[in-house]
Amino acid sequence: MKRNIFLFFAFLSFGLLVKAQGFSSVDAVVNWGNGKAYFFKGNQYIRYDIATDRADQGYPQPFNASTWPGVGNYWSSVDAVVNWGNGKAYFFKGNQYIRYDIAGNRADEGYPKYISETTWPGVGNIWSSIDAVVNWGNGKAYMFQGNQYIRYDIAADRADAGYPQPINASTWPGIGNVWNGIDAAVNWTGGKIFFFKGNQYTRYNVAADKVDEGYPRSINNTTWPGLGPVTSSK
Image (cartoon, rainbow, N blue to C red; front, side, top):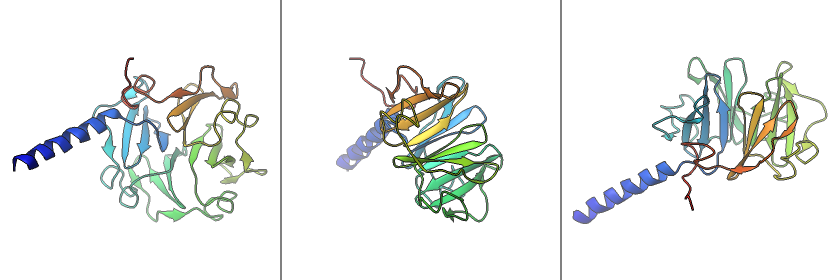
């Protein structure tokens, strides 16, 4: 009996320790448009306050049907999430996607649907899954898969002609010469886009169309307070 109690508390302590460590990489990030951003990793997520530049208290939380109605009851994780700018957000997982109503705080009826040429013209006939999506804020969205990307016209609801194109130093200065793919991307504030790959991230200047100096950097508790793993001061 004593051994079982010890194992229980050891397991509980380990779980709290893991929880306290945060994320060293992310699967998806989305700016919710209300001063909060959501970071997703595996079956957990963290809500981040943009103004104070740190994670809110009480996170990570589990990704499930209670926390993300209409999404978490189908999937236990996500590949990509994007705020479409019209009160809807899109969640992607494998060859499927779900449209989410931000005000209603739940998925719309009739989802998930498959990524196809019918649902995502100019994308679904080329890719069957998506690694990352970011709304550029100018009527265009960028979708990433492997070492390629597609520019999508939001108003026309279809990919622009001439895509996909390769992710390289020419098409994405400061990104393509360091990484050959993207895990997650988010339109932050102040004309900045954050891109994530493995345990690193980079900040992209929209006006200058290139990465800011000093990037990429590591995802840790100093660069992303309350989100990244706690690192030693040594």
